[in-house]
Image (cartoon, rainbow, N blue to C red; front, side, top):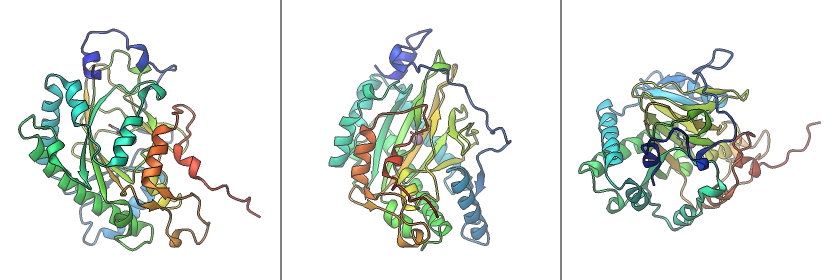
Length: 347
Ligand code: OGA
Ligand code: NI
């Protein structure tokens, strides 16, 4: 059964496989110091505002690992249309079969990874359904859903727009690290998978995770959410803070590969989704990633001062090991910590 089917079967309690063994307290949109996740206006990114915007991106990436962007160039119409196609898809009959059939990872390594995603070793199960569309490299729309009728056309447009926005953001991030503009996109920007996600209403939102606490294994993630809310980010003091739904904004976060490449300057932080009692929630996440054969390690410019803080590895290796690693939802451990090179004590 899809989680949507479980949710609509009229339960008052969540089934055991979804149950967290502790109470999940919903966070507010600011931390106890009154700070919230920055919203950055990208208007004028290619004009006189560029250096100011890059400075804001730098501060947000250092302080939060998360920020929202507005005036990002992707039209509200395209966002509306894409959400509409997503809603229609999740309303089709036999959802479970469709999700199984279409969540494809076209690369060989990725199919290995998909097989390994054994939810029983990663408990509790996420209270969500999702379908991943592979856009780059190796775009093959033959493997995308043929229903609803406009799904492929709209999602192609959406992915093209997101691939462009990804380049804009990686270029800005590259400059913000003092690197040559296209370096980040060249190393970390080749792949794109877009995940269409549905979080059904949940009878016990205080004991379930829409998605368990995790950091993203890829380079950067660009996500749009609807008005329901529920995405929460762990700030640098360990406090959970909600990402406030902001119409037509994208949420951008640093993934593990950018943390490794930036030599720890930018942190890939933990985040989670708390489900809603009354309302289902839709989000669409586009995951930029290196090619699987790319060996990710920080460039010499970023290791001169401190030395290299992480062991590099190929992205394929990273993903395989990441998927196999047990989950520690409460301890704040991140898989990336396994790559940290032990540092000699200073002085
Ligand atoms: C993810 C994720 C958040 C959301 O899919 O990695 O963190 O709001 N999603 O759907
Ligand atoms: Ni995530």
